[in-house]
Length: 131
Image (tube, rainbow, N blue to C red; front, side, top):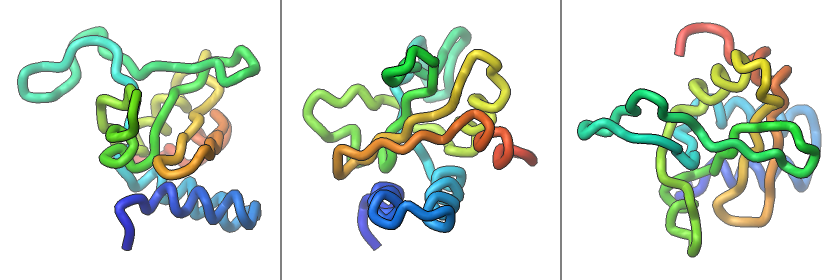
């Protein structure tokens, strides 16, 4: 097992580009801790404070999406990285699904210049159930 399991699954999906590899990526995302650029204050115990949010990007088409980073322990070490908070993928899926202004989640690999988008519709479909 590597230090970058989600990035490895992303690479496998980019290479094969099948429904099966995409499903494996989304399932691993849901069950992983994901990095974000947190905006706002954290409580002294590390919990998010009032007004805290996940940074968004318009990812080229002007539509807002929650900006995320696979394998945050590695991603945060990259020069210039702004990845500063870890959050469960299941929570991010719920956030995207419940925000009508959000079009999804771009996930940036920690090892390659790869970004895969999870659409709001996909997030809604898999964000069901308790988090």
